[in-house]
Length: 386
Image 1 (cartoon, rainbow, N blue to C red):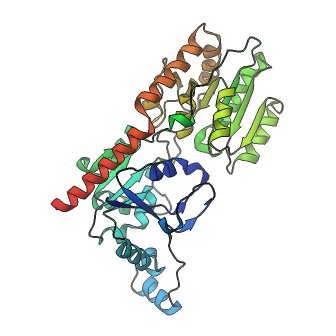
Image 2: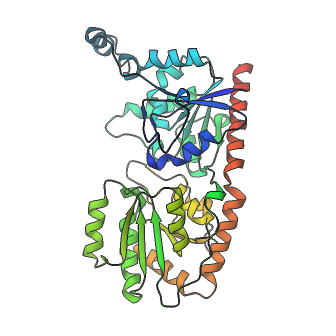
């Protein structure tokens, strides 16, 4: 059976559950993980022999100084990571190297440029952004797209951005995130008779997710329907600011910050809710969404979605059929969508049923993992032909 080495700088952050599902879901390929830090091993379980943690740099100070300031070598070289990675791959002899996230691929570029076997770099959203403080970063990103054997994008919006950055079209492949449908079954729900609509958003608490827009829109909705509730699941640097905004809007008793929820608890929250909200927005540095995993999971349980025309979201949410899409940062339109979805007869159950059906047709996990394995076979064949 062929072997793929899966490189992920941190294995894994809580919001990277989709990567764990992908790695452990392989059936026609064996894999092992290369990482600089192994976190949450009790959650993201792997056989210890299949997680190779790169050792801390131990290069002598004089050698490190010489490599960094005299030879002008990149960090992967003067920190000793190049040699450590080379040693692991020489011992384990994988057929393909899959690097998760574009910025990690840029970091590994000096290695990838000299490695003789095929490599794949997958882009997920924020990793297509450039860096204003480092103008040379975009040059290295463009070089990466010309160097690696194949490039993966999670959405058509990311695909277009990668093409704009100079990725050769014949190297670019689509591979969507798959949802394990057995973990997110369709829930049985009834619309509330007393206006107690339950909205939910699950995401990292960062500016890109538009949580402040969701809170402002919900505040207007709750003014007319005081029994309504809004639960926000996730962790992140904006928690304190968002809690203050909630209180300033007079929503202390209607909005709950539930923290990061693991699969079963998150599914239970979706089953108790009526509507998923996700008003993402493009950031000034180009940071954007692919297709949010939490949104796909919520839709799989039968939740219609209120979201924005942003990134890959319109590829998963059919406006007017499985949810309602509005312009980014348009709080008035988001509030109007809340009102329409909960007031128009038959719309809410019809959209929820269609959402669940769409996810089963287009985002089922087994099919997407099989597609990824086909891409591995393709990369290996391209290398043999070359």
